[in-house]
Structures are given as structure tokens and as C-alpha cells.
Length: 69
Length: 382
Image (cartoon, rainbow over all chains, first blue to last red; front, top):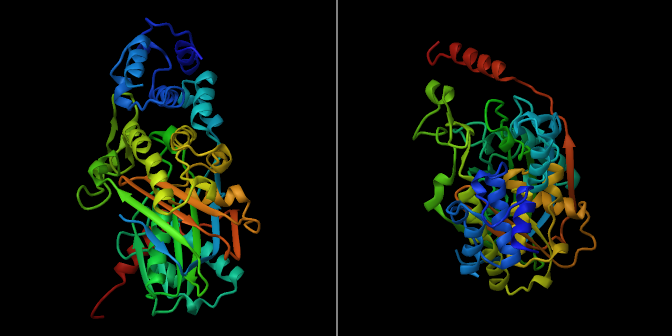
């Protein structure tokens, strides 16, 4: 599945590359957990909660995962 | 810790009791989700909320464990005088002093020659208790151990109720004894005390006592969650990171040092922290879907130290007759700590999960009056 589609499912609203995740209504500890789980399952990448909190936009998150892959 | 392996310890009975007096359902707490059905449903999907059971005020871990142990002893038809050790593993004892296991000894009417003590351990408590009991038996220090384990976590209506709705209260009693026939069990335990602040009750002991200031202060964090210093503080994301970094590798190590493949294990009872945590860690550890279950968390919640064994009892519906393979327990939590085991259940004569109501003998107010009267009427000289 497309990375942004996966994020859209987590946040239950449309997420595109420029979306600032921290502005989304559903940005909370649950969505951070879901991102960590998704990175692990779909990309075999281990993210920590602070990794996820350190990025703002969806594309920054994508870059981080790709770098760690 | 190196692996501990035992060859002469059998588990003969496990009785698991959940107090049914109070049952809460997340649907009745939609106000905690800004009255938004969408937010509530999202939390349910990710966390896996379901009914949560609590003991009433005045009922403690000791009460639940005593009721459970009475039932277990009668089901196994064992003579109480043959129990030579009692271990209580809990984070919620009746008193700081004496050890609450002494109260269990009195209430059950056990021999005065018993070795009786408490162990303070949280979500890894049951596995710690099994390991300790097995060490006593394998070394011949003890022949028949009563292991009591459980927690009664008070629901604080002023605080983080979403967090409280993860937990249910429970008490479990287990009999372990010496076996002439060979029975294999192995344990792997570890600790990261460097992260002890990640889950803590800051005002619960001698470092910062419970007093009117700590009782009356509610502290709000940056996300708006409220905490009390005498309650449980948790850095949820740090604990999640710890779980993901340590536990999947730990499971692999348990299997490899015990010389087992995952195929040799029939089922892994995983501490039911919440749905997301369990699903992510088993996926990372490469555990196939038929070898774990999250249903226990949904049906009963996180019962702290005993939730991994509840997961096993729940999965097998307490019927181990057709179980030939080994069963693993995996637990992790406050400490931070982790503890796992590979066990055989062939000698289990009895096991059950019981939802039972408890009658309150003394409320807090009555307990207060009891001690006030007792001390007022005390004299060493008259």
C-alpha cells in the first residue's frame, strides 16, 4: 500500500506529502504507536517514539523510514 | 541472567479469580473522548477496550488470593499442612509491613513452620513467582509451594481514566511441587533498572511519603493528562520503545537458549498490555498468528502481573488434556523488567478462571475505626 494511504488510514483523514502530521486532529500517542507498528510491519524499520516526534511532515517521516530501511 | 532450567518442578493447579462486583465499559466513558464516537471507536480499534472488572472498596489482593487458594486446595484435595512455603507477588499489598503473605497464612490456617514472604513485582510478577517457587523446590528447600499473585488497582475518578480502563483486578493461586518424574521448565529474566522512572508511583513509600500534600496535588502534563504523585505515573512512549526494542529479541533468546524452535511451542501467553503493543511485538518476534491471542485483553483487560497466565488459561479454556507441546509465558513491565518461561502443563490436575463477587467485610471507614479502637484500648501495663 502507498505510504500516504497508510498514514491516511492511521489518521482517518487525507494525508499528502506536505501534510504536517502534528496539525492533524488524531496526532497523539495512539497515532505515534500506529506509525511505529506500520514502519515495523510494512518496511521492517524500527522507529522510536522520539523518532516519530522529531518530524513534522509526512514526507519527512517517509525520508526517515527510507533512510533506516 | 543466564537461563534457569528445572527438571523436578510440576505445576498441579491454577485457580484464577476476577472480582465481578464492578464492571466498567469504555462506551460509558465517551466523555473522555470529547463525546466523539469517532475518537472512541479509533481508541477501541487501536487499544482493544472491553469490559473491565474491579474489586469494591475494602477488598484487596489478599482477599482475592485467599478465596482462590481455599478453592484450589479443596479442588486438588491437598492437606494444607503439606504447604511449606507461601509467596505473594503483588504491587498492591495490604500493608507495607508486615508482608501480606503472613495474612494469607493466617486466613488459610497454614502451618507455623511455613516460609512466608512477599515479592514486589508488577507485570512480570507471575513469572518471577513461578521462577522463585521452582528454585525453592529444585533446591529441595521446599516441597510444595503456594504461589499467590495478583493486583487490585484502585480506579481514581479524578485522573487518567482512559489509562485506568486498561486494567482489571485479579488474584491467582498456583500450587507447585516436587516431582520425581522429570518435568522440564526454563526461565529467562532481565531488568533495566536504569529506566525505573518510566513507570512509577512517586509518592508510595519512604522517599516521598503519602501525605496531605501528595494526596491533594493533581499535576497536569503537557498533553493535558492528569496525574497524582501517589498514583501510577507512566511515560507511555518510553515504555512502548522499551517493549519493542527488548521483548522481541528476548523471546528469540528464550527459545534459542532453551534449544527450542517456535514450532516446538504450542502457544505463547503474552502479557496483555494492550492490543497494539501485543500485536506489534509478536509481529516483530516472528510469532505466527495461531500461537498468540489478544482476546484476553479485550475480554478481561490488563490484569498486571498475572495477565500472561490468564492469556494461557483463556486460550485453552482451562483444558490442557490435548496439550502435548510446551507453553511459553512472556511478560514485561514496571522496573523496567522482563521475565519469560517455557512450561509443561502435563501435570496440571485443575485450572479455572472464575468471575466471582466479593462481600466487603470492612470498608475504609470501618478499618479506620477498628485500628483506632484497638490502639485506644491498648495498654502495656493495665
